[in-house]
Length: 269
Ligand SMILES: [Mg+2]
Image (cartoon, rainbow, N blue to C red; front, side, top):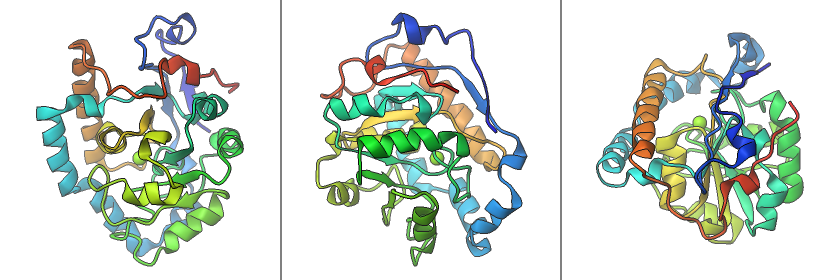
């Protein structure tokens, strides 16, 4: 089970003292190592286990993008909304605002790293998301569906079976590189009408902002299985992002969202 503990900044959610287009909910989400049990580990083919772990460490295109964002476009790393996890998102309101679909990252957003099982506490929220966007939910991951690690798409299919009602987009290039073409083709609309949800500033959020999505950052579900270097990069990302906010930087404006808090709800945990 996830253990969530509120920080002193929680009242921001109910008192509207935050800057429009950005809500930072400083809740700490952590989970014990036993969350990713042996069965779940076995659900990922072992031939892919070490390759994907290494791939998470060495995303050379990601390093180039990281340097470019830091030097020239730091606002791209800032999400429109930040929440502890997807339970905080009001999917019905998202649909009412005019969004046409939702794209999720997989690892540490919907599942524990390397797992093909939905993180159990998120199941009700995903059900609400499916109801608001029937047939319009997809996963765009740097693991399942990425041809580098999932050449025959078997992991993508297994994930689709495990998490019903969600399509895994097959693609060639890791976030944040590449275009939004595969996603726009699947949804049949511009990326500006879609929501991108993920747990990483420099992959999910940069990719989403670069292509015009509404971007939502979640806290990682479990750090216990995450490679050491990724944990260090997370720390660096958080330091940089905090500094950019202090300097007054804000995410790119999004035409469908005037106030971030209208899409946030306090979940019944
Ligand atoms: Mg992730």
